Length: 57
Image 1: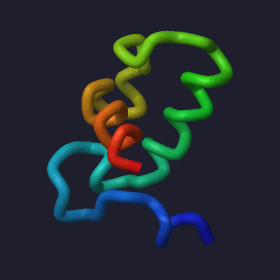
Image 2: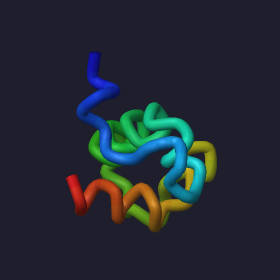
Image 3: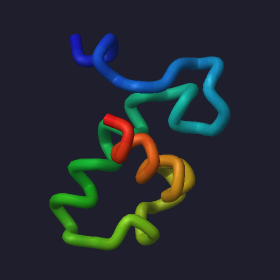
Image 4: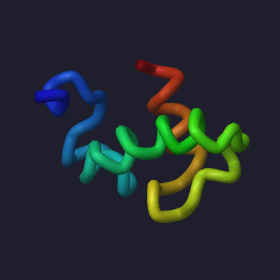
């Protein structure tokens, strides 16, 4: 349902390109915790990749 609207695709480099769910789960984590982008847990991928994808969207 939301997947067609997620930026990124399997051919994109990095973990979040292969699994859009990681990005979709990382953004609410930031909002919920009030943490800084660089504190994003590794399970969501590299913080810089998640942040750049957020900025593009």
